[in-house]
Structures are given as C-alpha cells and as structure tokens.
Length: 408
Image (cartoon, rainbow, N blue to C red; front, side):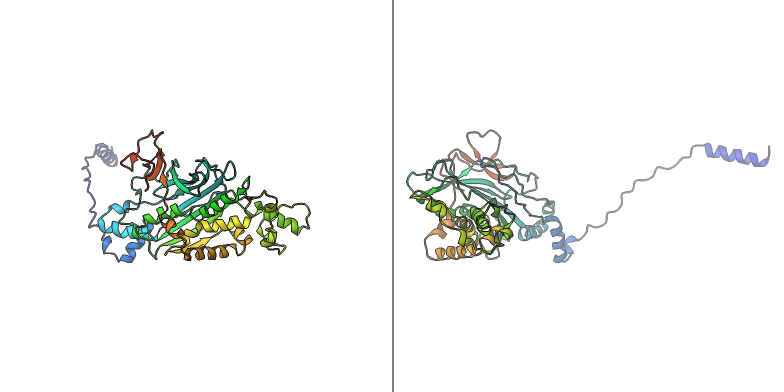
C-alpha cells in the first residue's frame, strides 16, 4: 500500500469521526440607548404625529336617498392608528393638538319630508325628519305638529340603528371636554331628501308653517354640534356642502322652459342644466302662476324657486355664527336658479337683524327624548334606543328612566 493511499485513508477516517462543536452562544444584541424622540425639534415631531393621526374625512354623497324607514348606510371613514396617544403624557398632548386641530371632522345631515296624508293634517309620524351622524353620535330627530289647531312644532329624537364602523378599543367615543377647544374644522354634508313637489297641495296655513319650520329644522343639529365645541370661537370653520335628490331635469319649471324653447312642441329629454338654459330664457319668466290659479281657494303649491330658497334657509343657521364658513350648493340647481341664493341670504340676514327672536330659538332649540326612548352607547357612539324593545346590553348614558321631557 503506497504512502499516498495510507494518507488518504487516514484522512477519510479522521473526517468520518463526529466533530465536537461547541454550542453557539445566543447573544442578545445590545439595543443601545432609546431613541431621543422628544429631543427632536417640535417641527419634526409634528410631522411624525401627522403621519399617524391625520385621516381622510372625504364623505361621498350617496346617489339616492333610502326609504323613510331606512337610514343612510354610509360610514364615516377613520383609518388612523391612535396608539401613539398611549406612549407618554407629553406625546399624548402634542399628538392631540394635531389630531383635533388639523383633522377635518365630518358631519352628515339627511333631511326628509314633508310627509302628509291629508293637506294640513299632521299625525305623530308626519313632518320633517333629520338624520344626524358624527364620529361620536348617531341620532334621528323628527318635527311634527303635536297640538291640533296650533302652529307649534316639537322635535323629538327617534331610535337609531345605524351600524357604527368605529369599533376599535382605542377610538374615543366622544371628544372629552379637555380636547373640544382644539377642534378647528368640520365638514358638513347636507343631503336634501325633501319632496319638492308633494302629491297634494298645501293649505295656506300649512305652507306658512312649513316655511317657518324650514328655517329652524337644522337648529337642533347645530345646537348639538356647537355643544361639543366647548365654546364657539372665531378659529372654528364649517365647510358646508349641499346636495339634493332633486335635479334640474326633474323640475316642472325646467320642462316648461324647454317646451317654451321648442315653441310648445313635444317635450324633449333634458340632459343637463346647460341644455335647459341654452335658449337664454330666465327661470323667473317661466315660474308662472298657472298651477296656482288652478288650485282651490285656500290651497298653495310652492314653485321650484321657492323650494330652492327654502333649502338655502335651512342651512342659514350654519352661516350665522362667529365661525368661518364656506357653502357649496348643488352646481346644477345653483346655475339654474341664478340669483335665488343671494337674495335668500340677504332676506335671512335682514330677518336676523330685525330681532324676531328666531336667532335665539336657533341657538337653544333641542329635541325632546321620546317617551319610549332611552340614551345609550352603541359601539362607542351615542344613540337613542327604544325602551320597549330594549333587548341587548348597552352602557346606559342616562341614570334614570325617561319621563318624556328629557333633553341632552
């Protein structure tokens, strides 16, 4: 056996023996000192806070209004991680100023009505209904004439059942009093679901009542909103956007206008506002009294321009405070009723300066709790539930049984 072979075998036998290896030591890496976040300049810390706590509050208006017995199934978006609030006290306070001061908090208001079975006759289920939705509460209140023969309307809260998407444990249910003065901007979406042309004409008394009611129908929503602000200040800003289920192509005056343009011929389909106005004829010329003259004495059918003016009057309370505001009306209706909004706002301002007491009523007008209603928290949002059908466990907001005259 050659020397080379012996060396090779010796090398192979040496390699076949199990090697004894020392166990690797599990060394924990040294994390080093914590990052000195609070030593960063405040401007840099604020940029970090914005990355965590700012959210997109864009609320898309629905294409149609649900039925009167259904609620608007639209959630308010809030895709934000608020765990940074739990780091320490200083970071909590600094991040809170960014969260409340720079976010635009959305508010959704849906108006339905008027609903009548007989002209001039009201029941407990008839009148105007308003759905009020914010991050911290979801309410529905209802206006009705509750005393026969008297021009008295009383708003009443109704039970609510809208699903609340804000179910995370770290979402606050309502701005605590210590944070309310930090809120600067709110985006208010008003969805007009009224019937502009009721199936039956109003009595003159009923129409006058509805005109007065329209000026205060959103007053309870404004009252609840400003009560959350701790105190109303000039730095507060309301961005108001109004949409309506009634479009220009559905207006009787627009159809008459197009017939007039076509020389009284067959009615052609109206595509948009520009098509209607192409003939250069003003709306006021076509808002004739033809439908009114055909009514029986003592009855009244409002014109399209009057219905649009009432929509402007409804949002007037949100424009009458010390806060800043912007108002965006439905573009097609605003173009069609050119000048109506401006004239209506001037009339609202004149009425407010005349000292009729409507401003005081707007500031303090709050609905009563219905006799079978009860305040409760549902998924971290304040709602009103029906006491008779109160089955699921809730965190009751009120400590006593409602007597029917409770207000919040």
